[in-house]
Length: 298
Image (cartoon, rainbow, N blue to C red; front, side):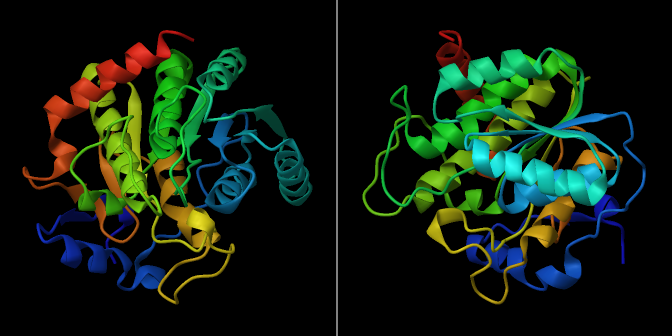
């Protein structure tokens, strides 16, 4: 089998075919991240490292010797994760408060994290809204949490960070835009998809603006993580578990990968068709400028 970081796949133009390929044979095709190189003496930050894929990413980094900071909203679950992972791995873990739905909290977290040099920053945390809601600043919640908050953290920590890994979802291919004011009725799957397109846009735009900064986007897989209101661990048989979902992000965090690229757990580096919404450089630049404006108030 071709190694994950050497595998390249041209994306199908037909959305249903692409989504089927996302899940076909996930368990066999998802890479197992090598346990080397060791990360002793290095610092990693994982947003949402208190649960789901994020906890497994934090655990994987700690197993390789990294000191890990979990940035999360809920103190009790964050500290429990820190204690459990530290007991298992012997690594140092700590928690910093972060409410991604409030830019004031995001700005405080960026200031705290900016006191240290960060070897790898994993933008993992995310929501799939069950109903329409807005953030503390009035932005649609999936956009605010998944896209805007991580944009603020990555841009403010860029000069202190060696590599940023941005989790996205290939389901973004169902939509063509990402905006802060999207409104909907019922479940927010389209809002989730739009936010994941936004994550790709800011990853690609960041690479265009700062080509020397290491940043990659990664689709972790279709995972039984509890996202979107499911009971953690439940879901169709074709989903992978949290440990499996952590493998592609861990690979992007620890192995040599191409900066500015988009990696997929079953298809490797994605070669996006020119018609793909993620390649809309005009909208990516416009969204970047809009988010810069939102962030400037904090």
